[in-house]
Structures are given as structure tokens and as C-alpha cells.
Length: 96
Image (cartoon, rainbow, N blue to C red; front, side, top):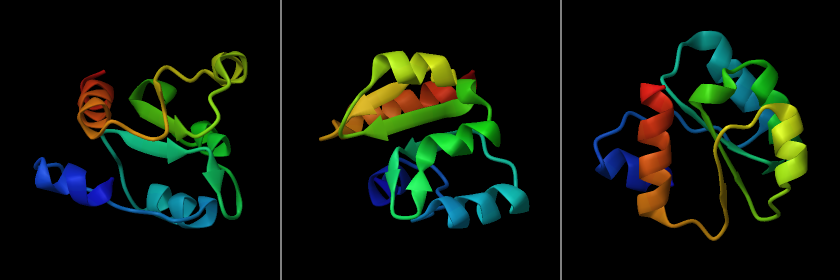
């Protein structure tokens, strides 16, 4: 995902865990955040408390629309991802 978005001209900061994502969020502002639900150290949806859900795109192998709605998720994509759809979702989140 990161390499594809970079090739599309977007600036990307990558995190492989909830802890690493928190460190990046502490260090800077982001126009959009892509959140994977299944991270090695926890549930990626916990990051929504630190980000604006309108500027977030959630990706998951197991979509749960009811849970997502309860968490305030605005955009989500099911894996396997269509990369063009990912790009469109990220661009929409960054403009919101």
C-alpha cells in the first residue's frame, strides 16, 4: 500500500503496529490516515481516538459495518484491496 501511494505522488509514513502509529501521530499532523484493523499489537480501530475519523480510511479482511458505524468509521475497504479504490479513498479523506 505504501509504495503504491508513494508512486501516486502521496507522502507516506508507515507504521506496522498500534504503538508505532501512536508515535507517528505524536510527532506530526497527517492529512489522512489508513488504519488496518488487525495489527500485531492490537486493534487498529483504537487509533480512531487519536485521529479524525473523517480523515481516516479503515482496511480490514473482516468488514463489520455495525461495529465500524459504532466507532464512527466513515470509510472502509475490504481486503484484498483494489489499489485504485484505496487511492481514491485516501484522496477523499485528505480533502474532507
